[in-house]
Image 1 (cartoon, one colour):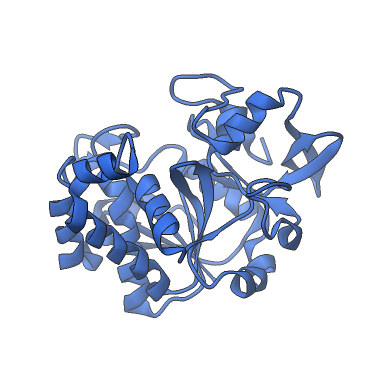
Image 2 (cartoon, rainbow, N blue to C red):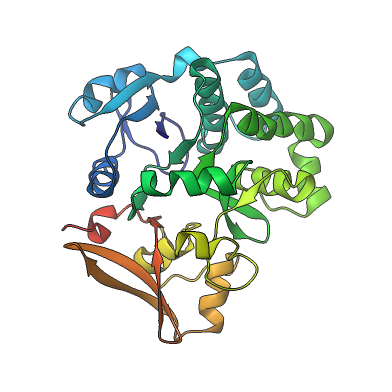
Length: 305
């Protein structure tokens, strides 16, 4: 298995800058520290070359210069995605998938797990690697809402499976453009979450990770004995940029569920000396393998304070 993280400087929400250029986000330290509580082995970190020195303090983190994996395809996407500039947050959030695909292709990497920098991991990925490989032949991702898929934790079988996704982004933008896509599919924004939803909705070449132990988005829950956070659980426990803990976004499946069932919640158990989050419903406790901490206050929800 291979684990890939990504960060590059951008403009818009979630900016981290210093006078010499883009900086690594402060919460990255908590993301990696939490990951190491459950996982060992190398992490590939795709980032700007100037950040290599700041990554040196992390054990088995291999810096990879994103500039080495630029391509005409990325330039083509940037030209088509003309609602935003190439360094805008939404553009960078989407083109990282192109960079990861190029990196995987160049090094023939398979069975890759991409984890965003504001994710806390509460399980040993290697122990479930065979399960991921057996269950998912396409990119596997978390469904966030009726028109969005979330990339907090993603399983990528091989470069081909991810390149199908990025090829689709180019093709559909060539066909409709950003304004046309909004009109055609009644979308408020065109970003990586809605583009991924369109890929899943139109091609069916995308697999979904379980985000609930029951209902439409519980497939393969029994295989993991746990669920994954599509950003909603992390927003509920940690809040958002504009709302405090207890957030229940109306445009998220989990937010809708929690609004309909205010008695449901998230609790914590100690396992092997480590705090682990659980979804609690009807006297049932279901483990959460990940939390996507939208507020960026990762430290508060780590397994070791």
